[in-house]
Length: 402
Ligand code: GLY
Image (cartoon, rainbow, N blue to C red; front, side, top):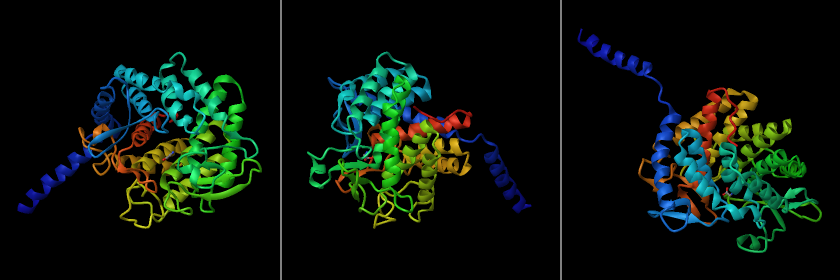
């Protein structure tokens, strides 16, 4: 009898737990994000001018200038909050943070304008169809197109006449990250009917497919081309552990970029490449159990190496879209697992901490000693994108966030 009386309440507790409604991970993350991002909005709008928060270090929020590659992510994050909540508060602030980037449509000295303008103006256009936003996207595509090098068939990522890039002996470097800028070009062809932009995007994707990958489908970070002959001069890294290592965020840009290229072209070779990258990622012996990658799959100090939450968020977001095209349930399961890990206290900051950023533990660039094991605005951006995509899939909608 005694034993029975102990067992019955325990069994009832298990039964009660299994019958209680499953925690809604999207809703719960949105509630958390409201608190965090409201404080970041207030901090970034507290001075005379609106500032762009990028990270939080040593108790201080760091802000970046408008020409920094991460300048569009905070605006994009606020647009996603509008999408997730329907609350005009987020749209009002998203608009302010978007419009401070106005001059970037004419920036031609680096390739990141796709990130900067499409994540800000592009999301604003999609969600609110604001007058003038389409023109900003079109002008930005024109600026990006000036970086197309026809003999090599690629968009040049970085200039080599200044900064640390000038010291590497490169002629025409292309980084895998550049796949992320193609979405803007494809979209602008849709907006204008001018196929020039999509043709550039396809040429760039084809060259990347051909030249950026190792036999195991991990990607190099940098491929340096001869822009006159089109030949590959060198394959190497800038932000990874070594030239032959697999820098985690590079792998994330790679799976995301080819999934998007498939979205616009229906060309199976892009889908196949995204699937090969997924195979590489999930068969990698150094992919941790919680699926939040180390900053480099070949970091020598694994398992003590830093994790990169930004890579997990980007990969999860890509996997939801990849799932949609392939209906391979494994991709959604992996993405869900990543979201679950990122939503745990190991990666998601407690409300009121982390300077208002949502996620902790991302890595900017270890070789440059920059932003190591900190929150990053793009980790939060892709995390919210992944939540939106997850929600769309679960409602039977196309999980595209732009
Ligand atoms: N696009 C630069 C980076 O991923 O760090």
